[in-house]
Length: 126
Image 1 (cartoon, rainbow, N blue to C red):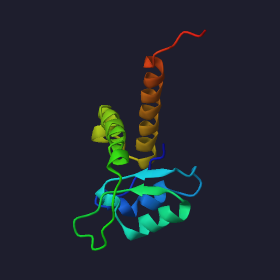
Image 2 (cartoon, helix red, strand yellow):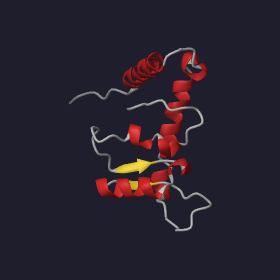
Image 3 (spheres, rainbow, N blue to C red):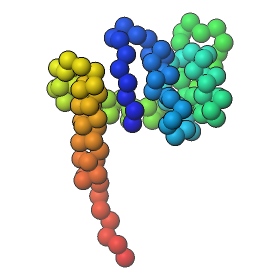
């Protein structure tokens, strides 16, 4: 997981380049909401061989289809953000610096990941 902080009034697609830097492994699919529906993002993902699954904005002139089956997987991402916001410190942003806030997001993410690992069912080996 990669997280970056932008100003509160910054549009989603302006922070896209920060999160999708070239030093990350190339995903096969980009699941995003309407805030990321920009030709620049779609072209960037096409160049990298990534399937963009982004619903169209209502004002879009050129119509683009979306795979609804894949788009429903975005619910997993939304639930992850919801779990992160259950940590009061993340939801209210008590930290004064961006570095400490991002650090606490990392700590909360690790805590969620460890909880997920500990609650996975174990299957008996043969």
